[in-house]
Length: 322
Image (cartoon, rainbow, N blue to C red; front, side, top):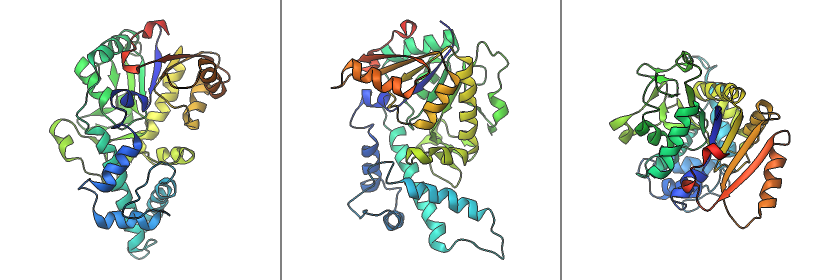
């Protein structure tokens, strides 16, 4: 089979543990139980989002929308400050730090599940990626697929099949350049990861003490503002540029456990895969096959779309049949 580009959504984690990997579970845990998110920081977030209080935590990306955009705006204004001219007051400075801490802790929640993908899923997937040099894009913050591929020996270093642009010196776009284009592909955390702090990636024991900074790279906001947040991160911007190239190299894209609602992603996929194949793998629910076919074909009107519905995504291994 020829090279393809995979996109993995939140359905992967929810197939493993539906309760744990829901966004609302992460938001609730950090708001109520996470020691790293202080009461003072919580009060700042409450002051900025209508309807919140000590018991009512943010429950969706939509509620976090304006606050996430404010972080980008504050950073933009700070870039113009000098010792003589200060654009932000103390509250404006503290609020972005508090919110960045909140979303970082939410991402850490998903990254700290202690769970692993079953070998029955990761082994054939890794073999397929190795044999086809297929690209991987993930929309989640967890480490399920990442660590699974590391253990399989296809994401351990610059000369492995998958390359995420990080070396000991940190991230550099040049590190994503391939010397064996036909045998190497990219691994792209499209909405960020708590592993990325500044220009570094935390590995091994360093993961136990993940701590956010002004240079974290996490997207957690309403879909219409995700491109804005992505553009404010040098790492994420590079990943999205590479995603366009990855799709252009591919004969098809396989979307696994993805909701289909990120329009910026849908538009990029369709623009690069016009007339080519898009294969959807998703969990069965109460909807009919015809309904799901219509949904996905409305998302990718200029592509050859096919939908495979399964009882459990983690039991699917027939990648060569798509």
